[in-house]
Amino acid sequence: MSIDSDKLVTFLIMWGIPIFMVIRTYLKMDVHDKKSVKSDFKKPRFVFTIGFIYTGMLISQIGSILLSEIINLVGIIILAVGGIVSVVDMWRKNRMKSIFVFLLITLAIYFLYG
Image (cartoon, rainbow, N blue to C red; front, side, top):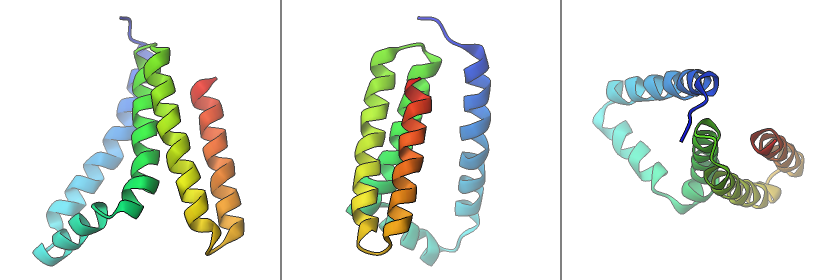
């Protein structure tokens, strides 16, 4: 299995810096805020919207780095499911934002699969 080194560097920068900053911020929180964050991340609404979107992006980019179409496709499917759930969830509150999210997810899928 070969690895695309250009995509690997981009992947490490794109995922490494935000993950480092999130962990650093989490460690600075007090106990009450940490419990609140943990409970928010466990809610089904978060898991099926933001969780699926980020997980799909991560898996798809790993598949792209490893030059594996199957892994890339699995990531894109997870991303699409998260995007659809997000659009349906947002549709009740703000239709313009939901259309914007739909367009962004569609654009991300286009660039990940292309």
